[in-house]
Length: 478
Image (cartoon, rainbow, N blue to C red; front, top):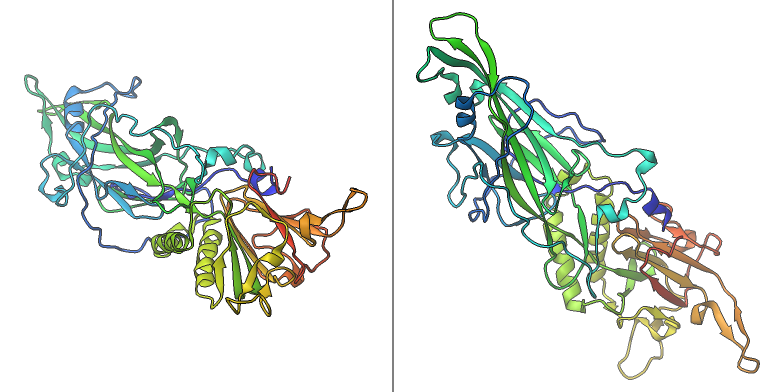
C-alpha cells in the first residue's frame, strides 16, 4: 500500500441542511467559521419515502403519554429530494403538524414518525470500466492512531422554538396540567446499508443552525467512482432527528409538581448522496507548467472517448466549482478540484489528443505531441524525450511507472537472449486527493508532496521519458 494511503483515516462527505435551532456544535478539525452563502433554495419533487419512529428503552424521567402524543405530531420538511451531491446545501425544518408558519414548499411532502426506512438499493460494487472506492476501504490504518469520534448534534430550547408548545397542556380526567415544555432534538447521519456507520461532524459533514427548528448540513464526498460517460452511482444515507419533550406535571390550582418527558420520537429523512467522479488519467505535457501540447492517456478498460472525457470533466467542474467554498473543511478537496480545472485547461491547449487506450507503452516515440502532416511523420514532435510536466488523477491507489528507456528499461541481446536492465525511472501514485501535479520535470517534485516514489533519477527527468506502465492496484508506491 502507498505511504499516502497509510495515513488516510476518514473521508469527508457532501452537504445537507437539516432544520433545527441550537448552540453551534464544537468542531473537531480545522474549519471556516464563516457562514454558508445565503441561497434561494428551489422546491423539488416529493420525497419517495417516509420516516421512522423509535422508542427509547431508558428514560431520565417518568414517561408522560400526553407529551409523547405531542412529540408524534412533529414532521420534517426537507427542501431536497432525489440524488444530492457533495457540497450541496440541504435544509430540513422540524414543524408541528398543521402549523401554517411551517408549511412545506410546493412539491415537498412532510415526513413524520413512521416505520423504519428500508434499504433502498444494494451497495455499489466495482465493475470493468468503473472502479468504486469508499472511505472504509482506504481507512485501514487510523490517522496517527486516533480513531474518529461519533459526533451527534444536540439542539435544545424552550417552547418559544415552537409557539404552540408555550400553552399549558391540560390532562383530561385529572386536576393536573403540563407546563414549562422544553424540546431537545438530537441529529445524526447514518448509512442506510450499515446503520452502525455514523458520519462524523467536520470530517464527513459540516453543520450550522438556522432560526427555529432548522439546521444546515454540508456533506463531504464519501465514495469515489471512476469517471464514465454515465452519471455516478449514489449511496443511501438517512438524516435522523430524535425528538424528546420535557415538562413539569403540576396541579392546575398550584402546588409541587413532577418532571416528566415524552418517549423519544425519531424521524428519518432519506438522503441519496452521489459518488464523487474521478477519471483514471494522466497527461504528459510538452512544456513545464502544463503548457505547449498534451498527450492524454487512460487505461485499456476505460469507457471514455475523447468527447465523453471532455463532457464528463465539464459536468464535474460545473457541479463542484460553485460549491468549493462550502467544502473548505475537506482538506484534500481543493487539490482534487485543482486537477479537474487543470484537465479543463488541457482541453483548451492548441494541441492535445487522447491516445489509444492501453495499460502500457513500450515506446513513446510512437505517440506525438504535435502531428504536423497527415502524409508524413517528419518534423513531428514525439512524446518520447520531450515531456516536461505531468498531471495524474485517479481513485486512491491509482499509479504508473515511467521509464527513461524503451521497453521499460529492459534490453534483450538479440544474439545471446540475455535480458539486462538499464535506465532510470520513477513512479507516481494518487492518495486521498486523487490528483498529482508535477509542474516541471527539471526539478521533479509533486503536489501533494510525497506522491513520487521509486525514483532513481536525480533532480531532473526533463525530456527523458520513453515508456510507461499503469499500476492501479495500490502497489505503485509500496
